[in-house]
Image (cartoon, rainbow, N blue to C red; front, side):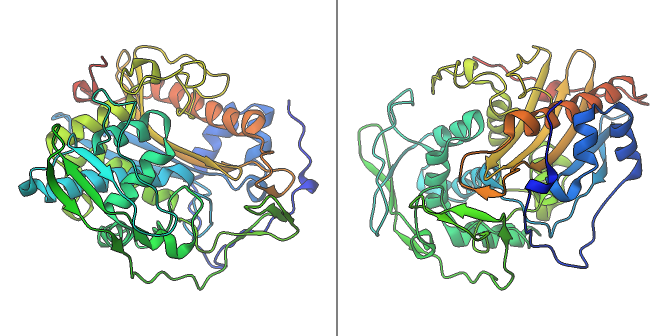
Length: 415
């Protein structure tokens, strides 16, 4: 067992004092009854690991219509965690939605998308060697976001949709505490408000549509300080003996991430206000790349020693770089940064007709120093996701269902 010194953690997390923490005793008992010493240790120390878990039980009626029951463990929308790459998920959805609103321009997700530069710190993208035709497109960026969590792909879709549209649209859908303020590249707050001019062209290079550069004048509420850790390295690699300030960083409550994922996977059963403006073909496209594994992708083509099966599949599989059985598919989005690990997953076992969602995160940074690249991902974080996933799956295998789910809509053809 990994030995952990709790006294080594000196952390400050911003949390509203009267925040409503959601807990279900049943879920905690289920985990504790099966827990290893390591998982028991984690469960006993929520103030150290700041874990949050949502188990979504899915039951079908005689018409195969699903209903959803959420079980929570230490879920607190006011406890900050760095969402890292999980914010790529709604940005990808919004990029496809925006294209549908532009259909009269003749642009679609496969159209060549050329990004230019017009402001300090911006960079251009005029080709993409990972694409079959050598050209960037929204489709190729979405693929890379879900296959391997590519940062540049997210940056380009952030620039296409625009900071203001991203946030106002999510707030309109009811995700009032969501905040996406930045790309994943070194940039100031002001530079992140400016987004690049973009051109869409046909294969002969003829211009189809031009999107001008944009500026986001949106007002964010940064009145509540968010500080994490006891020290951090700044962008110039200087050790600063103060907590790291996340006040202006991206913010994504775990419950919102779960609902956003559910709203796409089960869009037919989602209230209209929370549905993205996507087509049936968009949904099929997303299901394909949320679940496809790196070795199954030809464009992009990945080195599978680096991008192994479970590279972005934390629940149940990431620890030990497990091979995922052919009859199981995971539709998900993960994020990892600053000692935070997060996964929003829908897990399907086609052989045993099992389906459920698991959403969770954990903080593993025993020295309390951020940006030192010393996090216990391998020792604690991934084993946490593996064991929780395994316990819930074993429970689901034995759970009685009145109606067996028909899961054909989630069977994809991976070329």
